[in-house]
Structure formats: structure tokens, C-alpha cells
Image (cartoon, rainbow, N blue to C red; front, top):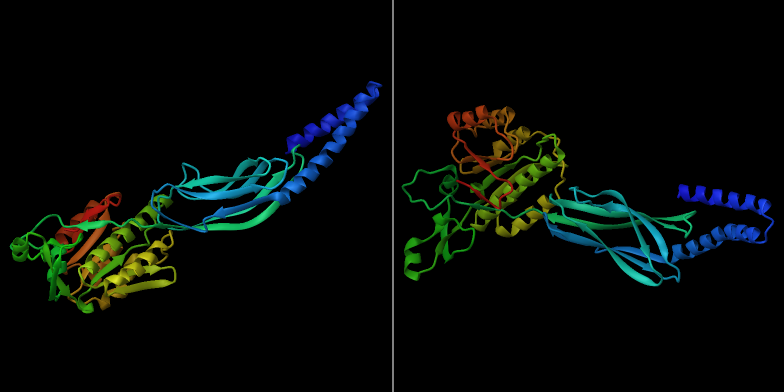
Length: 394
């Protein structure tokens, strides 16, 4: 806008001088037009300013990670003159970004028209986002003036975690050596309840092979489970890896892995206790039936995308006294360190059967720590690919 004002001032000065240089009636007329043009332009801009309508929709959008979606910016010009340009300041996402940031959008509006500006986005991390439109500016035709209106429009975007699937490495017989994953079943004092047809996610160990052979379709045993025999999952949301995108990716990896294991165990009719450090303190959620899973899923979906300020080993120390002998324990962390191992040892978990430590292959694990876990403890160490929908629990 500054350059237009300078150009206009130079032009007026030039015409004014030419009025004295050339004794012509045309030059004063041109000067008068130049002086009145901004007045006309300002009046048109003012009318346009009140004639333009803007809104953002929908009010709430749900999406999957990496899903291409759009938000609509709805514009309407109810006046006979075009509005050009319109400057809109809001939260938008560019191609190379993984989040929304404050940007300027320039557009125009023909007279008496409605239009929709599509604001595409594709988010790589789950969570809750708010897209805001802060203000809109309308310029006059000569680009000499502008009117600005502050806005409070916003839309809420919820990106869901991926629902991953834990799988067994293969069919095992009763004579096979038990892995920590098989201890998950054997350590529970389950009571047989009924038989039902096989569903996706059921453990192959629960298949009733004799009845399956007779009926020519998979039949599984349904068990009743007491809360005391629940699986305990420790979730590490405290790892700060330096790079903000990797940190957010690992927070997602922890909670998606935890949700997958929780869903599988709850689907089999068993209880799960999830422990983590939240924004308002340490959290513990006891899931005693499958219908409770949706609450945990919603809570993890809107979990803040920044690391917890409390250390993960403190979580182990806090809740380990409540762990019973029948409990199977998962420790899910992207940051395997000596403080964590020390906390597991002091809690008496390092030398217990049925303790599984899960970490992620995207991050290099210290070979010394890996060797220590495999040779000096009874814990099972699993490295999984956080980008895969399936991961091995054996």
C-alpha cells in the first residue's frame, strides 16, 4: 500500500506542476479527477466493507492422521462493485508444515457473488487443533486506504490416533516355551464362561480346536476375568527428544501402542490398568469391561502434544506398590535409560516374569542397555515399528 500512496502523491504533484507549465483547461480537469478519485474509491470501499460476509465451516472436523481434508471459508459480496483484494489473516497450513501457523490469504470477490475458499490440511499427529480467523481487511480500488475488521471465527479439528493391531508371531502348542506375551494368558486366573465364534483380534490360544474341527469354523473360549488379574500398562509421555516433530511422533507411538494392547486384552474379557503422567498430575485408569475402552481412546486423543514435565521413572515408583503378583506389565517408552531400569529394579519388576518393555526402532537403543535387559533381567524387550499398523507382541 505504501508504494501506491507514493505513486499517487507523485502523480498529483506532477499534474499540479503541469497545470502551470501548460496553460490548458485539460490539466486542471485531470487534477480534479485525481483529487476526487480517492474520495470515490473510499466511499466504494466503505460500502464493500459492510457488504462482505465471511464465515468458516464446519464448526468441528474429525480426521485421521495423514488424511487430506478441507475447511471451507465462505465469502459473499452483496454489493455492485468488486472487492479486490481481500486480505484474510488466520491459521493456515502450508505443504511443508506439520501444523497450523498464522498466515495471510489474499483473494477477491466479483460483484453480487458467493464463493468458497478451500483450506486444505493434512496433519501427521493426533490431537486437538483450533483454526482461527483473526481479521479481514478490505482495500479501496486505488490501494490507498484499507478497513480492518477483527474476527473471532474458529473451527475445532480432532485428529484420531491410528488403531493399530498387536498380533501373535504364530501358532504355538502347549509344549512351546512361554514368552512374556504367553504369560499374559497363563498368569491370569481366568474362569471359563462360554464359547463363541472367532472374531478378529482374538488370541489363537483361546481357540477350541476340537469343536472347531467338528463345526468347520473357528470357535473360541470366552473367559471371565477378575479386576485383580488386570494387565498394567505404563505409558511414557515424558520423553523430550530435542526435535519437536520426533517428540510428538513418539508420544503418538506410545499411546497408539497402548491403545492397541488395551483393546486386544479388553476384547478378550480381561481388565487393563493404564498409568501415565497427565497435565494435572499422575493418572490411572482401570478398564474393567470393553465398553470403557472408548473413554480411554477419547482421553488419549486430546492428550497434549508436549512431553509431561514429570519423569517416567517416577511413574513406575508411584504405582508399582499397587501391582500384584498376577499382574502382567507392559512398559512402553521411546527413551530407554538407566533411570528407568533402576526404577524397575527397585520396584521388583526387573526379575519378574511377564514384564514386557516396548520401545521403537525409529530411535537407536543403547547396546549396553539392551544387553543388560536380555542377560541380567527377566524382562522381555520388544522393538516395534511405530509407523506400521501391526506389531508383534511375542
